[in-house]
Image 1: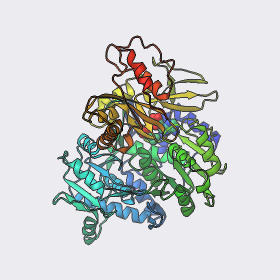
Image 2 (image 1 turned 120 degrees about the horizontal axis):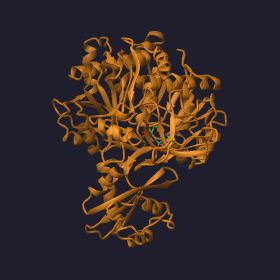
Image 3 (image 1 turned 180 degrees about the vertical axis):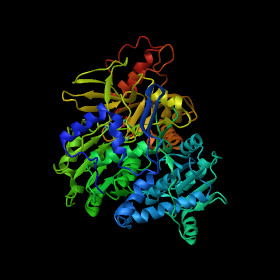
Length: 639
Ligand code: WT7
């Protein structure tokens, strides 16, 4: 496998960048030629940002699994596609060659087809980090079904909301998931969700943790039994469904500033090209290298850089079931040593949490195989950047700080490892095809260097969001109407004297907690679901490990004799409604919230108080009840 589109020098980067902006169509037409098409595309691009519409590679037909699997089975069938490291270090590692992975994907594809699932049908996948999760994703793609992976930490209610929104007809799940010392009973969570989901007719259940589960006759089927049937029939080759370039590949739900997560839709050809192009260039992947992305496949990072990117490149992707601190804080380093990992891609929150254990867990671990380190999900602070560089990379592995979003499909702004310069805490330069613009609040472009503003993108790239499922208006209004003719990212950003970009964080009501995106409105809705809660307001505050923590101001009118007990109950409610990742770090009971006369909560004030910034709260005289601010200041929860 060679990568004709891999950029190997700074000069080439500059040339390619220029080509990609001078004539984007010609640029991406040429890159598109490096993939396998069932029918060649006729037109490279059609777009209209005013309508929030982009189409790439029009008229073409393809299947992403032919590009991610079949192509490599033809040339390197025995190369390792996937390595799986279990939660517990004493359990057995599993690995899959391209031939084996293709075989298993086709088997599950047959199973899904037997259940009546076909092109365009939505399949919800709710599993732990087992190889069968990657197989399930690819089996959907093989038959043209649209996968919607839901992170294994979400609650039954969150699953139900997503299944209903997508009108999914099937669910693929596990009996349970092993994460650290915990055993999470996934199937029973699915059962609870499905009470509200009449669209689901089939559930495929993988036995993994052997935790007890109910199997409903006619609806639930054991994965192994279904595969055995396919084997009895001789496991025939399963031809890949022919997909139009713009047929949807997957839906992935993500949080916005409203209470309802939206289903970000990515389509087949553009996403494929973007995942492969960014993977090969940002990480400078070389054939045979071991790529270890520590994300969960339930997030976009796992979609693009555990499953699709590495496999499209014919690479070896390492998938880890567990968490960085189990059985101890040396687990990542042990995995790097054991599997001779070459590329490690993780989140600042993981780095900061491991920093807290000092260097003892690293001592004696051979990290000499590492070539490239990556960071994703939130701004990386300089301290964490330097620790990563010094203690993990031994000042010998470039760090790529990769900025992107669920909506962008793949990385948009990042240095290219060892090819373009890095700068601590800066994502640095846009990839070819990406045209960043900074604007002020009126949408006026801020030109020149040494400036900051809201980050927008002026021109489509192949991996851009196509729509929000079932509600294109929402896609238009969220991303394309805020500043006409621009894609709005929701992020604040500064551009230094040399044109390097540093993303400073969200400018909307979206929090980034440990790299997880959570809408403040969603958390408020969940808190308000608790009996006795009258109203709540949620803001973020700087958190040493998580990046941002969740601070909730709650008006409570129920019986509450014991604050701590009530807080615990509220946390339990939030876990139940969204999932444990959305639990507030701090809850302060208040008698009122700072509101304008028109009833709008002044979050700016609440954010400052949560921050510990008690002076300079700005003008509070326009508030309905200015006195409430003093009460809130007095009751602030510190620490
Ligand atoms: C938001 C997107 C990108 C995949 C994982 C998160 C923040 C992401 C960086 C970075 C600073 C970053 C942004 C963005 N973000 N990467 N390298 N530096 N901020 O995907 O859940 O869609 O969240 O994460 O605020 O908008 P997501």
